[in-house]
Amino acid sequence: MVQTQVDLVLVTYESRPVLPAFFHSLRQFTKPPFRLLVIDNNSKDQTKAYLQAMRKDPFFGPQMRLVFNRTNLGVAKAWNQAVKITSGRYLVFLNPDLVFTKDWLQKLVQSAARHKKAMVVGVKILNPDGTIYHAGANGKIRGKGQMDRPGLFDQEKKVRWVQGSCFLVKREIFGKIGGFDERFFMYGEEVDFCWRVRKAGYEVLYTPVSIYHYRKGSQISRAARLQLRRHSAQLLRAKWRKK
Image (cartoon, rainbow, N blue to C red; front, side, top):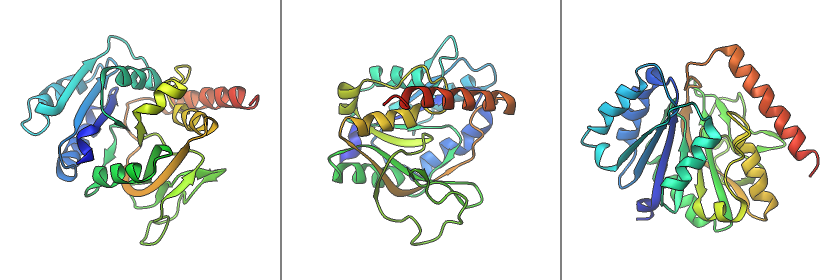
């Protein structure tokens, strides 16, 4: 089974409130074998203690590794850190505020394996109320705000970029285009990465695997989030308007 080649990568920061739902659904809907790397960006709440407890769990413990950073490195740096200390053919980058659905990982990996030129594979991100948050983007985000239903965005499709709360990357692409741009502290790093993948002649693929995203992964103020989003948007414009 190709899943033996999968490293799941979870980056946490002040994420304690959402972790029980994440781990419960991961246990319920994810078939081993897989490896789970959790990188904590110096949380000050009870995140570290919770992760250490999960490390002792019989289901997660044998395949789970914890890394505790001394400072908050941001998302892109933590993802690059994960690339260096994992070895699987596929890396699946995850937010802590996710709830999974049945056989999500098996379906995601099968889709990646079918499409040889696709170096990034994203999923159907749903809001808690069942509306679509993101189904890939071609100019604009597909499906945003629509109530999900059978037949809606249920086909694999090449897209320009996918949303970064849950997406697969084939390890081989890092040797061709490098890692994530560490100037993006949070937000925008997956967009930049997808654009670099496509510029290098490879594909970004959307696959209709449903994942619920609660968008409360870190206890960061609304003002701080807005500032981070604006900064990332400025970086993207400055970097890609010259291309």
